[in-house]
Image 1 (tube, protein in one colour):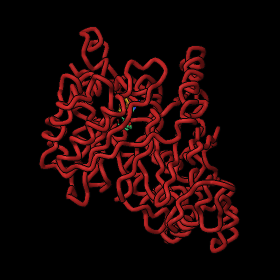
Image 2 (cartoon, rainbow, N blue to C red; image 1 turned 30 degrees about the horizontal axis):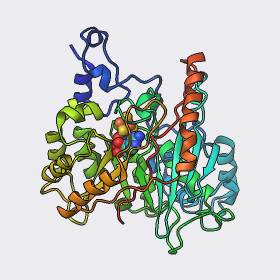
Image 3 (spheres, rainbow, N blue to C red; image 1 turned 90 degrees about the vertical axis):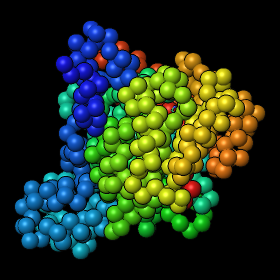
Image 4 (cartoon, rainbow, N blue to C red; image 1 turned 180 degrees about the vertical axis):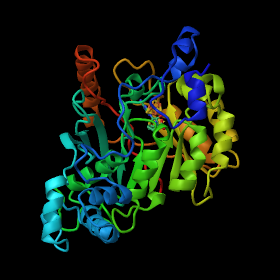
Length: 441
Ligand code: SAH
Ligand code: SF4
């Protein structure tokens, strides 16, 4: 009989995952690894159906064909729309001066260039910005999925941390998002829309300017130069949409982000890793967090499905891996749990032969969390051991702590709402609050 584990093994891209009653009765460990989703929307659907924002070339083509644009014109029209939407940041069809008046009128009658709604924007003292974004409703019972997206500006780069799911099916014991149900996968358009919203907000379009006093990179480069999939959700449980979104974000005739400046972070969905490398060709980050299976089984429960050995073998086989394209291993520092000298030495031993960077993340506590962050001296000592073994081991500076404080409050608001109208609302708040990472590019 198929259990959630079996289903996931056959098709690990198929979140939401259902746990069968039989598995439940048998007390399968699947229950504590994955939760079921409340709802789903069709893969690749546009947010709200009628907005063209975030669509792939193929989706744009279909949208144009649907309003009667003849087949022979489609390629040219897609190129025009692509230019206006993704290179110029157009908000209205009337801006599209090289598109005939008649077609502009047709477009405006059938579609919009509406962005998802920014419910709130918080700006940290250090310039980090966090947006709570509400996606358009996908049906009568859906109030609109809410996700967080964070912008971390530095002098020489601007990193956008995007979400791939609303909530997460996985249950990592130190992660705030892990305590939420998975509401649903985001569509590729909804993932791309986070970049559009960010570029709108920080004035990152040809004729735009940043808001008064905003902190943006000053090196003359793009304000959003890097993307990390480190917001809510497990990107490799939504691989189709994540790969499609990366295709739009990195298209040279539009948003034009280098794939080497896009990092996908996974908790270790081993069967999807090779595909990500082969099809999206992005940088990879692995949420390792423990060097022994017994501990990783608890911290990152997907380890019970794909253990450390399988995970590191998949890393060794990651397409395009080289010293110039290293894998980032994320390691959250949990006091008395995974932060000993022996852990550091074992970490170095395990990663031998893998071109790697090790990113030590001070644990970010949240209401109800059962862990504490390691002391600063311990983190330094750990970092020193890793560094002496020849690995870059930056400690990730928590950014935007002052605005992240609101994250826990926000989540509890959502929980209250859920209790009242559990099946009605699509809600999901509270990326776990660790955002400040780049990939060294
Ligand atoms: N689901 C993916 C990507 C999102 S999580 C993954 O797990 O990799 C992004 C990173 O933040 C992961 O390394 C995750 O383990 C880490 N993280 C989650 N909760 C955290 C917390 N409370 N403190 C510090 N890091 C955390
Ligand atoms: Fe999901 Fe990543 Fe949080 Fe684990 S760490 S629960 S995979 S978002």
